[in-house]
Image (cartoon, rainbow, N blue to C red):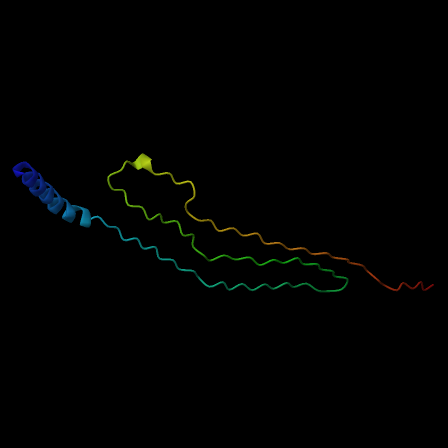
Length: 113
């Protein structure tokens, strides 16, 4: 019985000593992002006699920030214990523009002679 009491007291001391160390393990992660404004303006000019113009204009902009922070706390493990198959983020843009121009010159011709 005395050995059991001694073992229980020793176990209680180990737990009391380990709890503050374990309680101090923590991690705060913060990732701030900011995006800007997009201000696009397009001016297409041309003119004059017999001028022809066909413009296929596509204004594309992206002001986002990719979020790629991994919130991981390594405690009582090795760095090789973790695999990061899917992580980070991507920003994909796929703009499409299709312009069909049917330009003709339709002039009446006269022959003066």
